Image 1 (cartoon, each protein chain N blue to C red):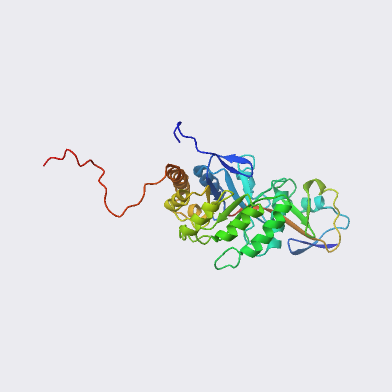
Image 2: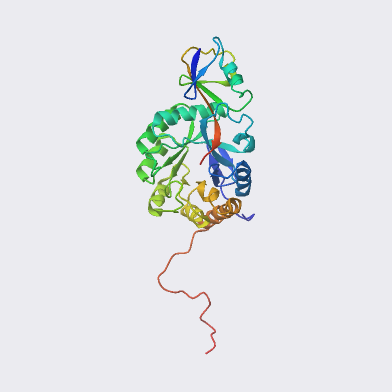
Length: 264
Length: 66
C-alpha cells in the first residue's frame, strides 16, 4: 500500500488485523508444514477444530496450539462436523474453555456429508443461542442473501457465505449472489470455502469481500507454502483492485494509443 | 467406580476429582477442556470437582481444521 492511500483496517469483533487472509490448519502433512504455510500466508486469524483427546495414545505428541500460539495468532475455533445446533453450541462452549474465555468462534452447522452444505435452519438456531451466551460469531452460511441478512441482523460479527462447496476448489460459483450479499452487508462479509487458487481469492476480494477464509486451496496445493504466499499476494491484489475500481467493460475496442499524429 | 471418558468406559477409584482424572490420563498441564455431564468444568475448578459413578466426561483439545 502506498503512503498516499490508507485502506481502512479489517476489524472483527473490535480487533484490527493487517491481513485479510484467514486460513485453516487442517489437511497439512504435519505440524511443520502447517506452521510454515501460516507463516508464508501472513494470516493473523487461523481456524482450528475441537476434538476428543485420544486417551492413552502418544501423550507427548505435539499440540497444535504449541505450534500456533494463541499469543501470536487469533485462534478461531470452528464447529466443523456438527450437524445440529446443540452440537455446535456445545463445541463452542468447550472451545471457549480451551482458549481461556476467548469468545470468537466460527459457527458452521452442516447438512450432509456429501455436500457439507450449511444447514441454515440449525445455523440460525445456534447463532441465536451463542450470541445470547456472549460469543462473537463468525458464521459460515450458504450464498442465500436473505439468510445472510438475517444472520447479520441477529448480531453475528461476520457473515461468511461459501463461494463453492467445502474442499471442492471450484472457485466463485455464484458471484451474483455474493454481490447482493455484499451490497446489503451491515457486518463484514468473508468468502469461506470454495477457493481453489489465487485468482479465485482475488475475485472474491474484487467483489468487495472484507477477507477470505480458506484451507484446502493451500493445504492441498502441490506446494502448500508457495500457494500460501500466492494467496497472500492475491488477497492484497484483489483488495487494491476493489479499492481502485475496475474500468467499465465495453464491447468494442478503444485505442490506448492516440490516433492523432499517425504517419500516413 | 465406573465413569465414561470420551465415550469409553473408564474405571477410577471412588472420590477422585476431575484434576485426578486429568493426571491419570497424562494430560496435566496440557491444553484441554473438560465437560462433565454436558456442563463445562472450568480449569480453575478441576481440583474441587468430584466425580461420581456413571459420570460422562469429555476431554477435548484443538486439532487442525478449516
